[in-house]
Length: 320
Image (cartoon, rainbow, N blue to C red; front, side):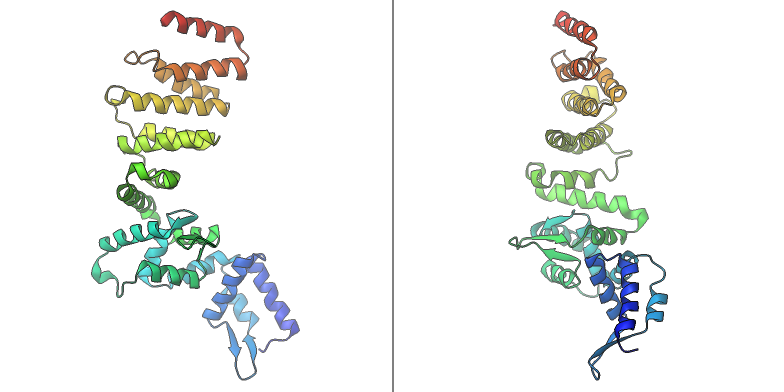
């Protein structure tokens, strides 16, 4: 059919139902219709041609454009899909230097015969920009960002579910190894999140130390829930003999976890972390000071148990 007002309105209705009026989704939806030749420009009549019944049928399997976007991504070359997966792990925005570093490492891991062609990072970035997946930030030619968080989520969904955590962990390890712990500050949360993708059965003091840094940074901006997450992740990565092999790191993680739990009013969890530290006879009372301060602040300001606070304070003085 050739476009007229009534038919255009019916097409508009389909587009709205599928995208809920989101401008980005609308753009992607229209582009998908054109790519799949459900919407065709008639050069003889200089008008668009479509059949809304076919469009309705072909797009009925989804209530929004996310499914169509995923289907479109899966039609990309294997190389482009792998690139999208890597980029999706780097956060809402990332530098060209970072994606180039990660992609070059990934290319070395890919069997040379598995890809028919190999493109440079710049070429792949340009492809993703043209497909409206990524955009180069204004006045920051060295930085890219996803045009919408849903696009990043769809790119992430390209990773096989059973490989999801291990893939993210591998990207985090590349990032960590290539930059070194001393250069991770600008990307501390992103790298730590990736390394934390797998925690069960993992013992790694270096990664535990990185979680401590992330927990401290989160606490400093009052993100106490994230601070707890990083501190508990760090604790889970410590060895079973942690109080003997790395007491300084261990007491810092437990003390920080207790402090963050206290700020959120989780007194039972705070007490659990405090008891673990205070029960250790191998560390001095001065090394336990942060836990004592957390308990005193909780008793005084949160629970209003002033006599108990005074009693604890006197006990500390007696032990000095």
